[in-house]
Image (tube, rainbow, N blue to C red):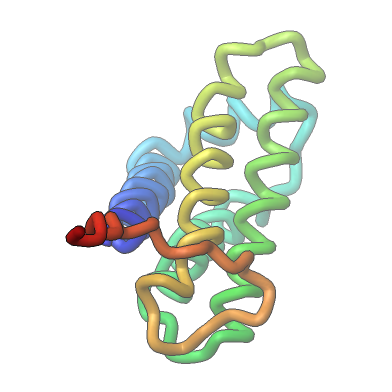
Length: 140
């Protein structure tokens, strides 16, 4: 049962991180463009694309109507978080990599525990053994 709670808490927090980030991209577009240019990205279509990614990725994970699509969303989120963290480290702004690191921890917890909480099973998620139950002592 703890595994199911771990899945839902980590998935909810990861989704919250992505939805809050998408909301910031929408509300503070100019700030986001400036921050991305400081990281070396100047593509004019990057912000709208990232808004779509930051909304659709968690929706695919939460909805989980198609295992392949959900696993693809996990992979996309993984690469996004790794590249985001590396971009911040590459310009010597390690504090900017903290959300990506926290997101990676949440992502790994969510991915590893999804089969315990979901009816549709991912073939790529690791098998997690159930918690051992106490065995009653034999009566003599």
